[in-house]
Length: 479
Image (tube, rainbow, N blue to C red):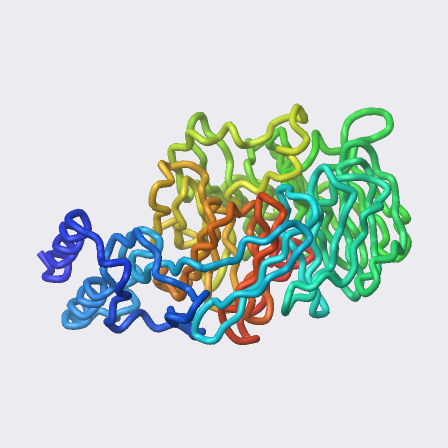
């Protein structure tokens, strides 16, 4: 048996027998990060080491050193480990101030980096924010007619709309100084990003719960049809005039996705569609029991679907919709969270599922409370990081990518950056807030939306750490 794996047995035994002292961060060399990782400073209000690490980083480094002595690259040794999230670098517990509604406060993240929190006037479950032009755009929540623009550097309110004609603004898109979003109560809005003034709005049908998508100056949105049933339509960004409309068998899961001249969509009934983005010609439709919006890469469609009491990660041929492979399958007692009808509008409006993404040749997903990276063709596992205490529930929100980092948020308030190649932790924090939706990453900052109406911003790197400015990464929702 390899000495390294004998050592791994010792790691697991030690992990079960005790925990590192949370008051003393380990002094050993930690995994190299491509962006500088904040550390505890000891100053008032700075980050403090969190409790609960399962493995001492010194032991992980010993394993990597042992593999190196056998001629294996240290990154390969690290990638082969299956660990709990934060085991190699304990999460830092942030001292985020408690503030009243309609207030903003700043705090230290550590290592000279900044953070801020802004609580909106109404404490509701918030969708992901959108970044653009140095500003952050965020809905006030399902039961509000409010929409806000905040300064991305300090959280100051720049403008707000409390008087939208319909309630329930979805997560927004930003492009060219315009902000685009649906409201659950029927209307598509395009606002001036600098002032909040309405450029145009168009009534689509009641309800419109999924987000819209944008590409090639066309907005793609699902909505009820006047004669019954649902449709996916394309409208001009300039003025909202319809270009085409095609029937689908229900409201969408999360949002349509645009890639390489085609629009893809998963519905509440589990069907998956592909349409030509310019003409609306339907290329194919498949009944697949889909449980997420699709992700497109390399001529393949990746998505999650239900299968009895399990959830599967599957790959489809983008040209035909034919199922090519089942890449991962997990027991999923949490599948009650997947909306299959319109019995709960807030549930449909908020649902994201465990949508996968492909980054740097790795297919990453968060099924059943485990962040997993796999070969996108064979499904061979490359690394896994488990959310401690998840109990196999859907405790992790969908992953996002910024540079070489995979950024994950847990519903219980932790946020992690993992090296995409190895899965090793670059930085990790605990916010003390319930996180409601997947994070966004823009110019060195991570922005989190909470379940109680707060937006939390953490400076975690330099401006080069960038690239995920809204839900799904960009206005087409495919990175």
